Length: 385
Image (cartoon, rainbow, N blue to C red; front, side, top):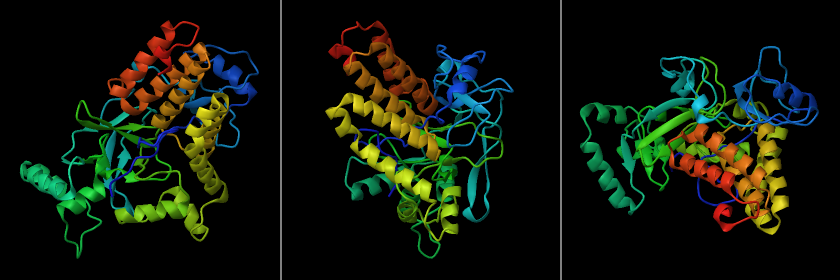
């Protein structure tokens, strides 16, 4: 078992779990958001509902009322910031590794971080191959470990081993406990990223850049100094008991707020959260089939999925990006070019926030935006792809 990535909306291949826009603003929020200086996107008529997300900062005194969720002081208006606007306001380290009580070491924000901020970038210590059988992969793993400098070997052996017996660590156990999954299914063992603990409602997300050979972690929402920086090791579209069962392979019991609340309810999660997670799993599973049968119904289902993520507080931008890309393709199929371009722009912005501007997926989405901007009014195969 490796630290898994979640499903892509409407497709079966693994992708980072992620995506949710922060709540649906009531009618007054649209007028307030449209008047914010520097807000991206075009103004819409007052009284019309407007979607908001984490990222941009409203003027002090502006209030956004969201239905069914907590009100936040920092929100993004309509769409994510372009990559050129996502610059760090402060210099210095973004995180620190500190003791976190009974859960051991963990990453903590060393300063305030905005949604989309790059928290960490590092090359893996070791890679567990996925293009050969287990015996060959382990043989190559040991050979790669022996070739590491002594300092990196020591850093590797300091990582936890959930499979060790009598407190004796093994290299395969360390890799299976701490490695993340790459694009080709390979295991990626990273010295610092492995210290980011799990949460069933994470505030960061990870990205593997195959071309650059680096592993990155991005803030998925605004994070305060001193907050624990967390990732998800498993598919989040599951109820509390199922998530805990899957997490046993890593040798710990999840202590995130959602699971702690479940402990207070004799192991059963908060009913509203349990229902939302179950609904999300069902909606994601049937998205592809619905979209193929009826694109308009598919657009409604995607919107409903995103709103459900809002209410559940699942704020990961890679999923936001994929959902908007899917919606863009459906709109292009329907000949609604302008709406398709807007969704593609949102997909690109969220992709930059979760993968970086130079990632292959971000470049692909940037090219799609350009293609849609130049596309004719009548749908063509060139921009339906």
